[in-house]
Image 1 (cartoon, one colour):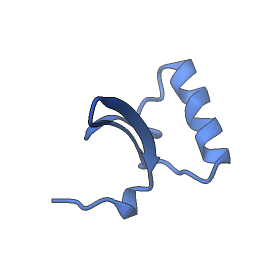
Image 2 (image 1 turned 120 degrees about the vertical axis):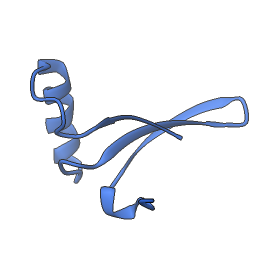
Image 3 (image 1 turned 30 degrees about the vertical axis):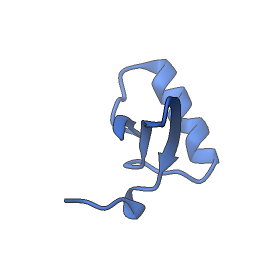
Image 4 (image 1 turned 135 degrees about the vertical axis):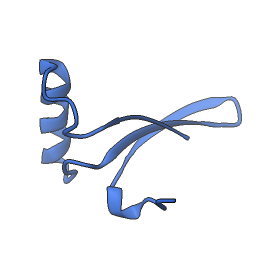
Amino acid sequence: MTVQRIIGADDTNFMIKAADEFLKTQGYTDGDVICQWFNGNKLESGTFKSDSLDKK
């Protein structure tokens, strides 16, 4: 799994800020992560709450 970006981490790019604001309306908060991974040959992506991730 690859972390693409962290919500709220980039406050200089207007498009990313706008996307973050939309995600916040969907229940996500600053610090949640947007990830990509492969499921076999299929590329998938998702947004995960930071407290649901296993931090090592």
